[in-house]
Each structure stands twice: as structure tokens, then as C-alpha cells.
Length: 87
Image 1 (cartoon, rainbow, N blue to C red):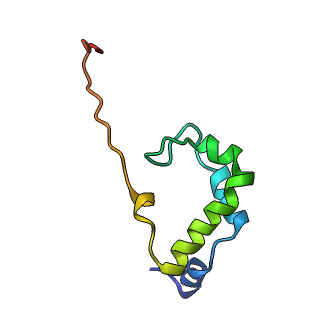
Image 2: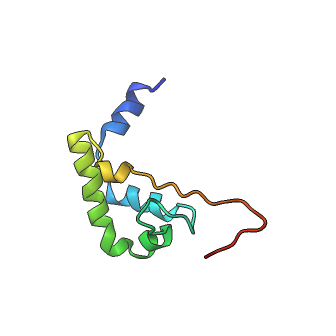
């Protein structure tokens, strides 16, 4: 169960410092989505990306809806074969 205090904390808008702490703490060499940008891109460019990312988070919070594109997934099937031929 979520307590009243936890619920209130979740309902407050995110701060730039909170987002930076989250991004800086992410595992390296991972892509966050189908755009192919790895975590290191966001970590290295935080000084110019941070404010824009914060605006996206605030907009989602204001409208209580996440942009469809942010919630998309790209699946790639990789064949598992000892005798794979690449054309």
C-alpha cells in the first residue's frame, strides 16, 4: 500500500536535480529506447539536455499522460545458430 505521504511525494513535480541524479545513476552502455541513444549520451550532454528532459516530465505530469513515442519499444529478433551466414 502507498501511504498518504508517499502519494503526496509522487504527486509533486520533479526537480532538475532529481532527474540528474537518476540519469547519472543509470547503468552505462544501455539504450533507453528505440532512438539508439545510450545512457552515456544523456549523461555527457546533461548540461544542455537536462532542462528539455525536465520540461517533458513536467508536461507529462501536468496532463497526466506520457507521450506515445516515449512509451514505444523496438524488438529485434536475433537468430541463434552456430552456422549463421550474413549476406
